[in-house]
Image 1 (cartoon, one colour):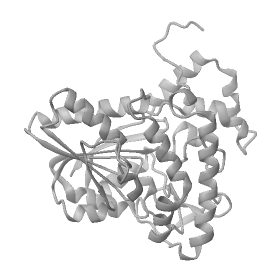
Image 2: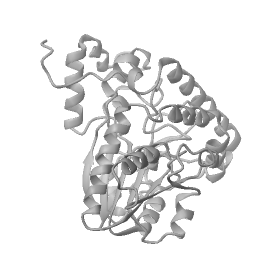
Image 3: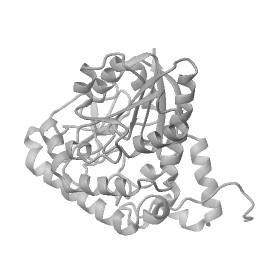
Image 4: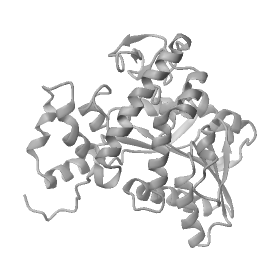
Length: 351
């Protein structure tokens, strides 16, 4: 095939993390998942479907033979049930080693070139431009900001373009250790749950951001209602989450080796959002959908690299080895156009 195309093949190890980092983090995440289950499973809580509120479900394959996963009969969403409670999740995020490892990985990317950060930053800057057309100053908050890596990149851009006086940045994260080790001093950071934070800032923020957060939450519906309460009139709620129907999540199941966590990956990811259920979820929470996109870049390379480790040795996705890099790059571009790539990016306004 000719090399004369506009698509570039994206190598996961080149743009995200090394092979050694991938193996180390995955292994530790599994160890931590087992530890949390051993310590807290007796206090796990039954819940209705976090997407639609439905009560009827069918059992799916357990995660690592420990965590129960079900599929809602009403909206077809997969979620962990029973789900780890607040104590278990607090222990996981504040005491388990894998989260420290991931934080070190995130901090190591500060100031480096990143496809994810570049696309994410561009999208957010476009939203900021649209808001500043009608307001002299705006307030932005990132919920689940960790130590502020993305907000730091955003702050640098705003400062370099003389916009830092017009845009006030805040960040919130439940991980106290991350907040106490910020990567930036140009942002107000708060160690708090989203719900507690929301009580003090009603209708305060013109732009709410969160990236790969709602899949972690015990009750994402309650979280969305809190976000609606802090969103200013004519404000924008912009977030991302893994796409449970993305190519890598279909090609590799949640019990296969995962270089990136699947939509279902307890005690970290507790429900899987998709291009199908996210619309119903947004409407249920009182939002209008402005835009849904799936800009994931790593699907093809992840499946190509790790399909041989899949428990489904007869998978049709094994044929991915027959394609060269130019062909795989075109397939990845198709996945994005078809909203079948690895991550969802959603922009909402209040209904």
